[in-house]
Length: 366
Image (cartoon, rainbow, N blue to C red; front, side, top):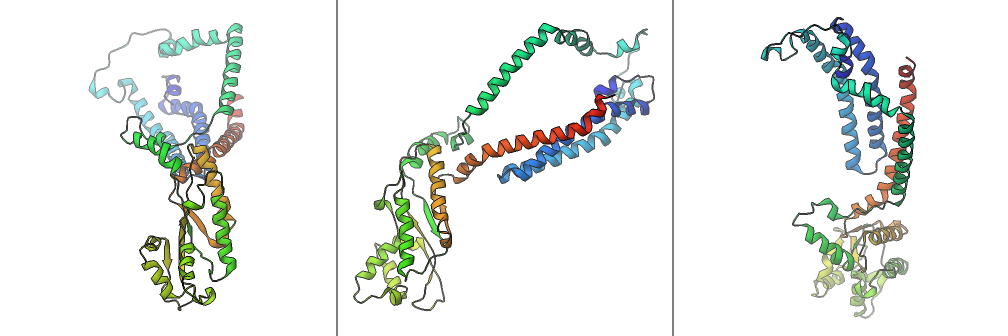
């Protein structure tokens, strides 16, 4: 807006100069603001990451508010400054304006040096045939390198990139990435809708799920599994004439089992229901663990986490979820960031193209 204002004739009224300024700069401001607003608004609806989605919403709101302030408040300030221009501008009260010598070329006087340089030197230079050929070759080289970079780029989101390189936490993150998150991975599988373990079918399905987890590529195996049900079954087998259908959920057996020193570790893994008839299913939820090793890269952790999720999704009636593992939100970002970025870029280009079709032809045809 200031650039358009400076190109107007100072002999005109301030209102006329502002009208010419807005007719010149208003379209550019509108197109830029609307395209930016549209791109960030799309990001709010398309981005799967809540933090980024909220950022897009706030930025889109800020862009629209900035646009409204430019065409209202800032335009008013420019008019007020134009009225004070003859006296030295808005800060005329702080200094005295020196009289300028008359010149016969008012237009030349109004043009700053940088404007004259771009008009008299730079523009003729870039319009030369040899310069245009060199520019085209340089652009093709740049486009080729950019396309190659986009194809070969690899997503590597890890906790160490969220921390400054000189942070004292960085050594711990490096050690955890190398040892703790690589060879000591023990996720907790929370079963929020336990089956009725009095039936053989329910126990068999739960054992089947654990068996499949224990036989994945990086699993340590049965020796690393921590599951209270197996220990409880061994405990019940020590009693003669035990009938699983009648005695499995009897409180006296459950209380005796969890009171034993070897079984107290399972108390935190089992949540019991209150006010349940003795002998009826009384377990509200429980958890089990099994260990994995060799996950020494975030690519392996990414693949394994989604493999575990795919397995437990096949047992949806158990309502199982994972916890106690390495930053799953980072892995979810790894999977979503690439397609989300391409979707956002494509949508942004489409929005800008559509808006340009509606706004730019009138400006070009003048």
